[in-house]
Image (cartoon, rainbow, N blue to C red; front, side):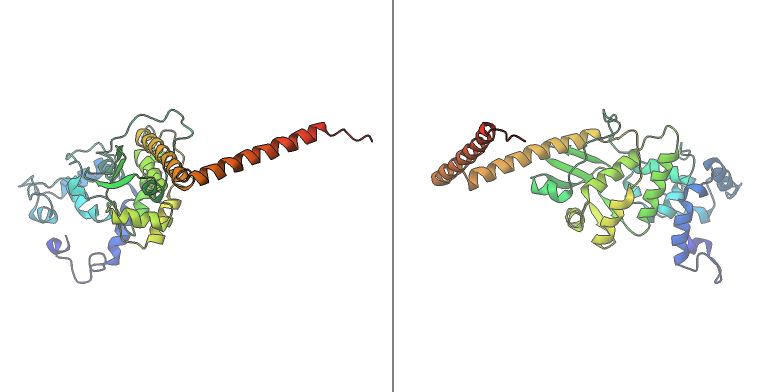
Length: 308
């Protein structure tokens, strides 16, 4: 964009790299949102009346789409794709006239466009939180990067697939603004908020972050401690009436509990039931424990009450 528009040397925006970070933050603030219809009208005013497909400057601004595509949606995504936690090229293509009311809602709709959500959890006040990434792998659950675009999670046959997500400095601002938008909007399903809660469940410690990074589920540009703290505080004081991922949560929880029980039984068999002498000593200790317990109970019942 800077090359195509050829800014002057004293340009207050395009000649300063740090200004782009401020622009990213300002453009995704809920209080700064401009109605899409107004943005679209202003965009149409910039087009050449002789060529309704758009001027050469606008066309050259788009580097990842065809030169003929000069929609406002493409321009917005080209400018903001650096802050998206997912690759916009792999996400569902938006039409030139989206249903989104402003830029922030456009980014939200783009990120959740391929999410396979299910019906609400039967208890609105609670849902089964899934264990952390470390706990899941310890129990035998396989963590795998999903090939599905967008922000999605699925579980099948002991494999938890999570779409790749990029964590960088501006990610927290984007996540918080989208969550705030879902919290304050009427009739808006908290799909993104539900996904953030799932990530918070998976990431409790820097070890969890390292495991997800090694599986290429998280592309972390921060240090593990900062990224972990970001997820742990992301959903504080956040309330949702509908949890949008109940099925993968309940499936993971059920599988984890079965695997954990199987591991405990295997440890019991290996450590205490594998040797006949250990079995005999264990049974003897249990019998002695119950004998002493019942003897003490009988002595207490048979002792006469002292008179005052």
